[in-house]
Image (spheres, rainbow, N blue to C red):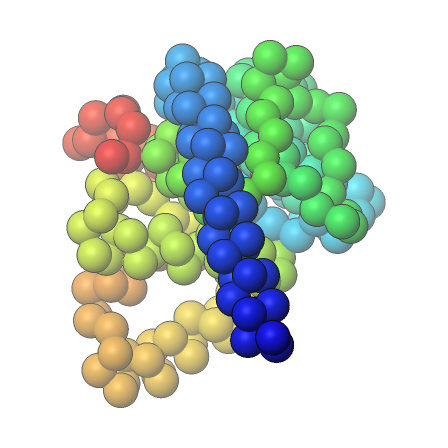
Length: 228
């Protein structure tokens, strides 16, 4: 009897998994249809916990303004902290401001600086991540936590394995990021787990001017288009 109950529960779970495909498909279709019309954008990542009085928040606002003034839209995760700063900077510059919101039990709520017609809601992290990767012409990565690292290393892995086209990945904040990069160089590279040229995928800067210079320089020799 006990095994029969276990098997029944397992079979019910498999049925639910099958129906979930339609919800997942719906998120992909909606995301592709809406994002495909937005045009060239740069994604800004960073901590949802960053306060609006902090230097990192203000720097993210300034970077987003400069990106918008250079003719790119700005995409964020749509929430508070650095995400809000990115949308705020794009909004202040009169640029395209996109928010890819995720339904979470804490922290996440959409910020008021997203364009009304460019706020998308997701239940699945993996669908949301596809939208960032497919429609971004660059990643600007501010200080953040595990979610920020997840987006960073996902992009590096996809570029490294030629699953998507190369685009600029820019880490902002030498003090914050240098320890991580030192470990990558001194441990991962030394162990032979990555190649020296993989490190060329990453730039580390401290100013808004450097961010825009790197993006503009890259697209002097590359087409602006979705990444796969």
